[in-house]
Length: 79
Length: 560
Image 1 (cartoon, each protein chain N blue to C red):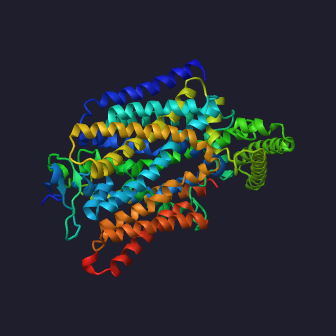
Image 2 (cartoon, one colour):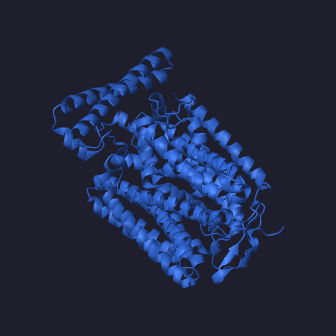
Image 3 (cartoon, chains in turn blue, yellow):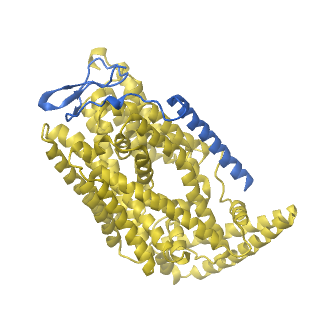
């Protein structure tokens, strides 16, 4: 995958980073950060469990539903 | 405080600070000082995020809130998992790939320098205000409980925090947070176990839970919709969700935590860990408050838990009647509670209903007496709308917990204060140096220069926080209003990031105008309506987006 947020050296030795990701701004605008090595690991990595991030997010949302249900039942049981 | 308490307190605090400084060795470059060289493992980030979020006020107030109003507050956190999933899917990879130090740095790449500068200034205003309060509020409570001068507790916390934050930067802050979170969890469990152990003979854990529920203290979910009610299922999911989106997506004190991650995956896991762990943790804190409530059903409680205010109104006419009313109702509640438990064991529904009604009537009488006492405090020149919520749990701790555990719980309060304020001070310094100093005043200096500037900025914000904390008491009742300060600013910041991520046609000037309009809308809502503060973020974000879209539509394409 093509790394996003590609950088070049600009005025004063600052790195000029173009707008990353899917941003469709036709005029890349610079922001200034000091020179730092590129990070090849800044690519998307799979999660350590469930295979894809989409499944992990779904699991978190299912967990939220279950915990809300548990709180609701707890409230009903002790009111 | 006995000798053992002092030993536990001092050992905990010194241990936390020394460990943080030990782990922070080599923080001598900007990348290491501000972002830990982007090497942090997920568990350190996760616990640091939790510790930074759990300020002492939250911890002290939450138990008191549950004592007074029940467990409804837990619904406020239902929006957190939604927000965490949204943030992990959107901003985490973007911030990581852009290799930014601050969230606002990204706004320049997307919009323009003025939008970045405005967002940075809004953040500095908001966090600068809360930095003083983060130190002041627990210092005030501790000074009342321990009898120390406020200036001493404020300076003590401030000096410790500033020392390790200036020396060690983000690494010291993060690794100290990990230890602080450990102390907080240990203290919470110890408090719950002690509270249950102190229940009178014959009152089991099941009985205690039953009595808390009968008094309406276990109302974890309320499903009705009310704009003015702070804690309902809907305000938690929507209002809380927007607040957490703002907090974790736009607030540098949180963004900086997950930017230290060694990879996108590590940062995502740290946030998702919070999404999963935070609700049970808040539930536990609120449950402790409910158990403290049951403890005081069987143990004589003071009319007010704020000792100094109680002494102040003790001699006033009218207090004796309030005290008699309170004591009579307390005795009636105790008898009704014992009768209710007997009826429950006997399996007699009719008797159970009758006893429960008496128990609840006695509770209403107690609440009425406490409200009357609060009005006496006001009449005696005390705080307007006086509430002693913040003093309930610490009063229980200092009066009834055994030696050693008191020191541990006081250490929890200090640890929570230190973790929250060190994160704030560190992020304030980062934004000051990266977004303002290096961007607008001193470009192209050496790495060493910026590290030194970051240390000075940290020192400045630390001293500012302590001085502001010393002045904050003059705000009086306004403290309550200032506590909601985050919601006054987050909505416009969130709106700006929503524009950046999801509205590609919007340019810098439209975003800038949108932020100004959003901020004005939030301030107007706060000033002229009684809409609950949890909705400010939703309103502010919506106004920013709509204004920016209107400006974009109204300008010729080449002028955008």
